[in-house]
Image (cartoon, rainbow, N blue to C red; front, side, top):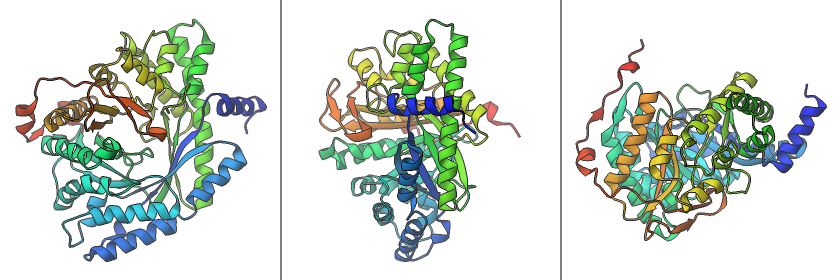
Length: 452
C-alpha cells in the first residue's frame, strides 16, 4: 500500500518535476518466424508482431488515464533480425526492415528495435548481410531502429566490425542528408549490450528472454534535481542518500506501471530500467542535476565525480525498490536531448573528450553526438573503439550514437525535433587514426574476463 504522503509526492513529481514513464517496450521473440522464403518469413513476422502488440498502445493509454502517470512512448523490440533473416534465401535485408516498419505503424508505436546483430567475436553470413543493409534500412523506414554489439568483456573488441560501422554511419548520414543525417540517430553501437534494454535505439529482444515480455524505462532527472536543490548544503554522503531515496520512489512507480501493463497484455513482466533519461524540456536535464550539486557548468573539473555519485545512488535506490531492475539503469548523457548539456557545449565547458571520460561512470556512452559531416569514417570508428574499450575494461555497457551531419561544421546547430532535440556540432580531433583502425583483427578480452 502507498501512504497518502507518497501519493501526494508522486503527484508533485508528475505535475511539477517532469516525472514520467519514458517507455513501455514489448519484447517479442520472432525466431519461430524463420523461413527459407523471405516473403513467408516477413509475413510471419508482421502477423506475430501485430497479433501480440495490437493492444499495446491502448493499454498504455488506459494506464495513463487511470493512474495519471504519463507514458511517453510505447515501443516494440524483436529478436535480432540477423538471426531470423539468416534462414532466408536473400542477400538483402532491407525488406525485413520495411516489414518491421509496417508492423510498427499498424499497431501505432513510434519505434521498433531489433534490426540488430551481435558480432563481438565475429560475423555470420546473416550478420554481414544485416550490416550491409543498415544504411538503406534506416534511410527508407521511419520507425525502425538498429543496433550492433561489437564488443564484450568476454570476447574483446571486434575491430573489423568497428571499422565497418564507421563506413556504415557515414553512408547512413549521406543517405539521410536532407534530414541532417537523422538516420544515424536510429543506430546504436554497443559493448556489452543488454538484451532487456527498453530504450531506443539499442533495444532488441535478447536471447534467453521469454516469448514476449514487458520492460519499462523510467525517467526522472527533474525529480532528482528538485531533491538535490531542496537538500541544501549537505555533504556528499548525505546527498547520495537523498538521491538513493528519490530513485527508490521512482522505481516503485515504474514497476507498478510495468506489472499492470504486463497483466493486461497477458505477458510476463521483465525489468524496470531506472535511467535518468533527459528530454529537451527545461528542468528535465541530467546536466542540471550535476550543476545543482555545485558545479558551475557541466563539463568542468569534478563533473565525472559528480556523475559517478549520481549514477551509483540511482542504481542503489532502484535495487532497493525492486528485484527486477535491469536494462541500462543509471544516468544517460545524450547531448541533443539535454538542455543543460547543449548549453555546456555552446559555452565551451563540455567537449567530446570530457564526455568520453564521463561515460566511464554513466549508464551508456557517447549518445546523440553531432560531429562535422566531413569526419572520416576511420575517425568515427576510432571513437567507437574508444568507447568499446571502456566498456570491455570496466565490464559495463557502453555505446555510441553519433551523427556526422552533412554540410555542417563545428559550432553549427542541428534541429532534430521531438525527443531527439537539437545538437551543437562538436569538433573531433584532426589527427588521423586511420592506420590503427585498418589493422583490423580483434582487441583481446582483458585478463579479468577469465572468471570461470
